[in-house]
Image (cartoon, rainbow, N blue to C red; front, side, top):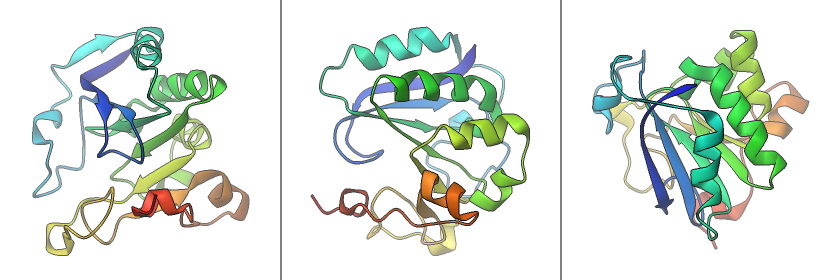
Length: 170
């Protein structure tokens, strides 16, 4: 069971192509300038089963990817890991935003590591208002990285995503 703030069934701003964006409720980071401060409280939101969320994704035949946002998806890592595995098994590209860095997640809880291992792409790091840039694609501040998670796990260090579509080139 996940605590969800909302779902956008046809997002074009949370990763390349048409995606389903799932926003979780609850975030410990409270980044100044956050564009989703209503997701900070861990109270509220809407409890949803992972299978029900997967069905929402399946209901959009144009969506080829899913993005977890928030809030902080890694604060509900166990449920998001189950959902990510389910969706990847069906051929979806799974990405997640996190205020934690890749390095912090590597040293995090077993559930956080499981979610990390279930992703294709991670946009990591807190939003830093002083480093905000409207020139960036799929991130808000230039300290955030778009990472190739399988390559990063294999290398034991952060590896930037090299696919042009993750950098605004189609």
